[in-house]
Length: 292
Length: 292
Image 1 (cartoon, helix red, strand yellow):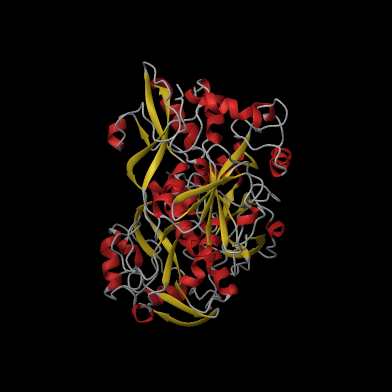
Image 2: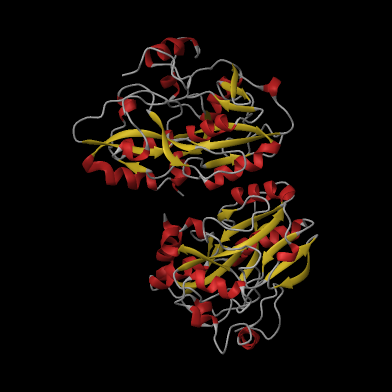
């Protein structure tokens, strides 16, 4: 299903990703070899530069987080944007200006070194990708850690609901929509959604299972009829990969953690650090605790 | 149960409140006479100065909100404080700096005129109480509207769970605790809780009923053993009124919307407007929608 080219969000396709992966973990390991490791141990390997690859499949049962870092003078508006759009931007932790160490979701983790790959944007333009960003750190930077749908996918699988992109070993398809976000200061834009095809009979269960986890996007935002939310072709996702929608399945759409990144880029702050897609922060938060 | 003196949070005792109330509503009406009115209609009466009394009992089924207004230079820290302490400070709406009109929870409502009674604090000191604050409005003021436990009390009553302070016609007892809030910038302090005595057999139901409404404080923060959270005498609440705890009942404690006010006062920002206790914003949000 994965196409043979670099996607517009920069995530590599399946074939390329597999090839890269062997060089991004120690020895001949892959991300899946870290499924049973504790997050703190894997963060140490990331911090020392031994792991620079994607984190999907690592540290089963623990939440992973999206990162957005902005200067203090843009931080109020972005925090307000997140508060006004909690479905797309569920905040797991926000730091004080200049603070590199996390306190809550991964105590002691260093924001500038403990993520395998970062991106830097200047005035909305991607200016570089790095495996650590210590040299770019400034005392006015505020970090936002945002929940990720990896957390609820574990819940879906446990409830015997298929997750197609896991079956097809590629990225979840993501689409820009016409669902407006509430603006805040300079930050504005539409919601990005992720899509998982669900058998009709399992849709209510999928709603209830994910609805119980509002800190990681919660219930679907839309069920069926892609055109009603401005998606013209399910086979052409704006980010990630196309997946198969089988007979008897309906496309179900969830608010996506790519929304804040897309909004930040469209709003062109002078300086912004994010994680690189697929290269998330491994937190010490157990997914199951995100229900409460 | 209510004492015959002004409380340290400024709420009048039952007897005095009843006396005042007749002068604070048109004709011989009381708050209860507005139980079936639409919030928008009652806000109009408040805006025109015809109602200046407490709002408890008005507009059944609709949420009421706490107000905190701070200058823009303190707003990021306070927003961060609320995000870090969502149990005590559930945000229903936050305005842009200078914006007096609400957009979401009470579209068109004027923050400076549509609440029956306001307080102004300078450097943490109460400097005045007003029925409108237009003259004090500044272009740098950011308004925070915070959920209120009135919303979940309706849910408790519908689930046949007694709400003692309603039975005893007084204010809910509130206590300072030793439960630390997470600090943010200048804002720091401990959680204030409200207490309702619940029959042992109904405690699980009370947890589930309120836990389903996280936007208005959610599940209890503590059940039984007041001393475990630093409360030495249940009969001496720090705010509000003492209520009877009957044989076979356990004191159940919920995070309280007085927390942000107590924290703001302890943190002494140069300027702050709040609602006056008991004099809330009547919103257009139906309580039942706060579950989703």
